[in-house]
Length: 132
Image (cartoon, rainbow, N blue to C red; front, side):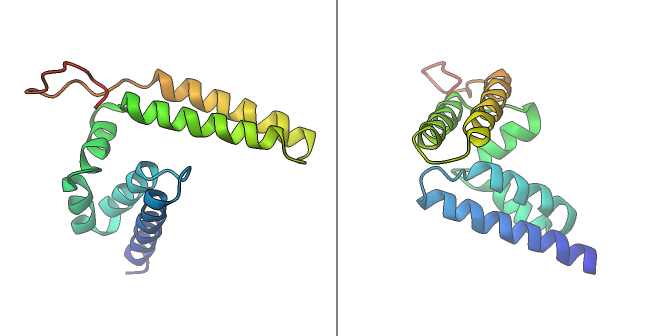
């Protein structure tokens, strides 16, 4: 019972953080929902099913689970937020180690992100684009 409670608490915390990310620019939503769905597989199958069936976020979660895929739109948004973060740190009074370490970390993260496949265009999508 303690184990299931821990998974559910992780799922709730992740959903809450994802919900905050909907209204706060720069805070990601989908990564927290991915974590919530993963935690749901261990202790809250109904929450997992709800997240997978969500009209807005369900497709992104399913694309990640099935193919490790990230949409081009999400890649662009994440890259823009990373660039904004680097610019803010550059003009701040942060320690030089932070001014060098954060951009290096974000560069590796961006390279990994852009190496992820993009979801295939869905049947019936007349644009033929994979970047929903």
